[in-house]
Length: 434
Image (cartoon, rainbow, N blue to C red):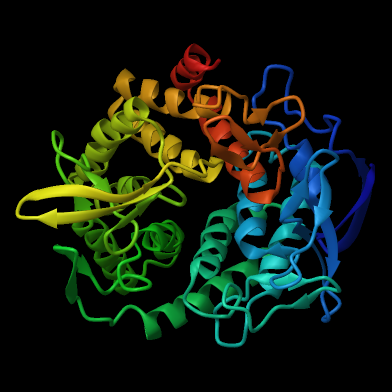
């Protein structure tokens, strides 16, 4: 099955188009013979869309089913979404080849155009697009509110804008305006939420984060707000970033010797692997505020919780109950284990290595990353550098979901970019890979 993918971009006022054949079984865009990063499958998942406004952009197909990796649409939600499109744009703009690779620039620009078109009048973003390129404005996972996809859009817009300015100044200006509109809504709806808490299963949890105590969402919000605050010298926003970081710290449980070993809970008394960027966000907050207390908290999770997971086996989620001074686990789920659960830990461990220079953190990062290369309980390579595909998950001890959709592909690529960034981490990755 070959797909004709057409790209559209306006650079310096000139419309540039390009079409290329992408195949789910053939490497098209490997970034080098020894590179772990291969965007071929991500390129294949990219699909042109045209919004009712007439704007041409690109989406990323959410589902691609084995064995031929045909596209599948969810009739209830849609076929592409900001959650995936924003992260795909991050893959391209973070590439070491981005500044010189015109095709990669075109792809990033078209994904960003998608993000901009999904912003609603109130400043938040819708998430899903239906077949026929109509926006899903009513679904619970798509509604324009203070949710994951709005924070994901902000992170990409604020990170990418300085790079896009070198390609398309008009588009970069639109990105700045879009981020501004969202930030104003955040200031209206979230910044002034009082710093109250409640108790859940014996644990005191904050109520001023997104969804009350959602540290996973707070982490993405921090990663989007820090570049914005820097660029605009917004001191009021900086105070809110600190408030978010303090909420994450409040959700750190256990200690270096006792369960759950200084991990950051994700929401209320629940920890889940997916989207657990809390430690990474705290490292960035530490640098932003020049406050090492945040990086110390992040280091505690990386140094103790991650090795515990590596030793006892990865998990999908568990709940934590506190009785007295002791924590116990309830409702542990081992599956599904997915790339989106591994990538955040790779990022945090890599940042721990960058901050401290200590080899033990490079070793942890490489060990975690090697889950994608067969160092997992299924003993199977989950990511293939030759095709750029990542399987959607380990769903049992000897069972793999062989589909390869957007999220798994993107998260694997982001992880591989981080592994390749540091020679010590890449060496550890190869040491542990099966």
